[in-house]
Image 1: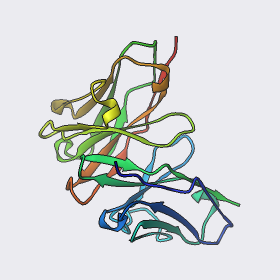
Image 2 (image 1 turned 45 degrees about the vertical axis):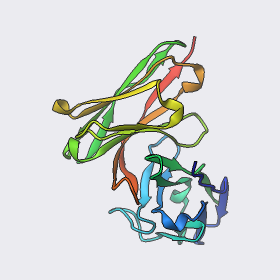
Image 3 (image 1 turned 135 degrees about the vertical axis):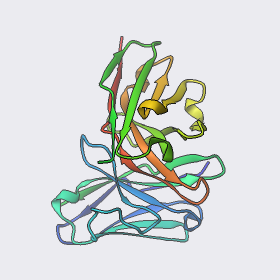
Image 4 (image 1 turned 180 degrees about the vertical axis):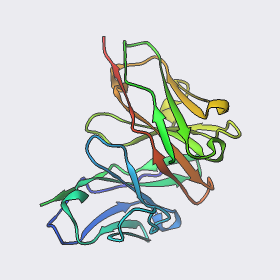
Amino acid sequence: SYVLTQPPSVSVAPGKTARITCGGNNIASKSVHWYQQKPGQAPVLVIYYDSDRPSGIPERFSGSNSGNTATLTISRVEAGDEADYYCQVWDSSRDHVIFGGGTKLTVL
Amino acid sequence: QVQLVQSGAEVKKPGASVKVSCKASGYTFTSYDVNWVRQATGQGLEWMGWMNPNTGNIGFAQKFQGRVTITRNTSISTAYMEMSSLRSEDTAVYYCARGFGDYDNYYYMDVWGKGTTVTVSS
């Protein structure tokens, strides 16, 4: 089955840039979507189709996808960005949703 | 506005069943899938399955096949997830989420319910 690998944690100082990776075999051939989840809340879609932002998501959030790695980039990080972030793809061979294990973003 | 409203928290004994509802509003219920995702305390998101409310087509993660049923009532724009033979490991928050995609190159979930806590304890 298809596996998505994320680092368990990423730390960044306020105002800096955070990059959260999502690894998968030839992931560039898939569309990658990203969710933000704050404690006690439901996930929120922040990036879809690798790099598109839903309405209401700040331009500071961007995404890319190449080779075996997709990346969620958060520019000018704010304290309010502290959350867990999950990548997700569709496994068309089994008609399944696949989530990465999640990355906890800590704002120092 | 577009939203998914889930039923309230449940406490069940091991071996029992639980049925969680998810009522859609603000959009045409039959135009989007409904997915079920669960999350144990301190753990990541675990996808359980999906349903197309228009066709009734469903799909499950292998570990839930045979133990989880997903149904819908289109007249009241509500989807249901029922899990049987509950065990302590099923204690989690269960989310419904609106799904959209082509079942080939892309599929994502753009609207989520607030979650339903299911506690399995003797």
